[in-house]
Image (tube, rainbow, N blue to C red; front, side, top):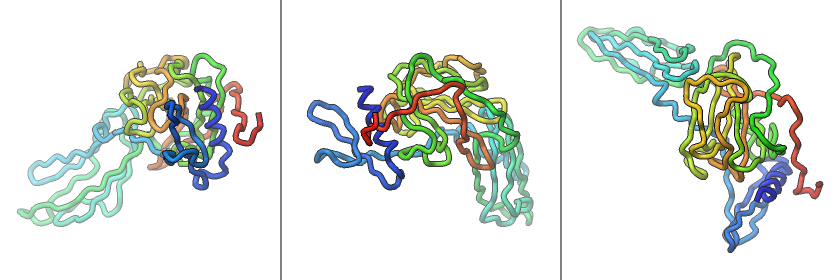
Amino acid sequence: MFTRILLFCGLCMAAGSAMAMTIYKSTDANGVVSYSDFPTSKDARPFVFRDDMDEHLEQQVRLIVVKKDGVDSVYVRNDLYAPVEVELSFTGVKNASGAPGRPIRRVIQLRSSVRMAQLTPASAGKPLAYTPKFNYILGAPTGATVGYRYPLPWRGGPFRISQGANGPYSHFGPKNRYAIDIAMPEGTPIIAARGGVVVKTENNQDGRGSDASGNFVRVLHDDGTMGVYLHLKRGSVCVREGQKVKVGSALALSGNTGNSTGPHLHFVVQRNTGLGLVSIPYQFNQPVGALPNFALGKQ
């Protein structure tokens, strides 16, 4: 099974462009799943890769409107253990003074509330009318990234990189461009490669689930960057939000959940660059083997 995973990952690395190559998934009479760049059977179906990650933050970062004595005070509440950058604007404004004419951007610190606007009736006795538009991104777009070489975020091995930075089949969007996939057996211990605070976890997805990232742990580092460990085994995450971890702290076990074609760890470092969460380049502090290109017969 592990060999088939490596063969498939090598095939994906051979693609020159993610937009130019379709991967097909087939299952034979014995239940063996295989992947190819062309349909190998009548039941072969395209396998869709997604570069998204829904962390369901809407219950932890939210807009609150407090109405008192005819005045609407608009707050943002951040219940996360990390700052968030927010942008607030108003449309359809009628009979309201105090509504900003342009979007307001502000960084809301962890576990805090900030009043963003206060709207009062322009004409007494008439109702206020407005529609708020609210966006937010994890992290603060300030501070310099500190140079750091990451220890390997797992115990065991040796393992091989199955897809590197700018990988052609799923590492092409802004959030994952510099991610690295390491093929490893399910159940491999995953550890923190850098100290910080656990910001968000997911532990209940099974199989492909509803989120491309599967189960994950997100850790905020001191310089504002965040390390994210994805596709973890269901029920294996052993840290909680708000917990401080150090290098080598146990986080979870590797798995095969979410948008994953085989057991592996997807590790990415991200930061907010201004209402945009993007991956940034990083290096491990020791060599990790690159996968031979099996698709071209180079072994």
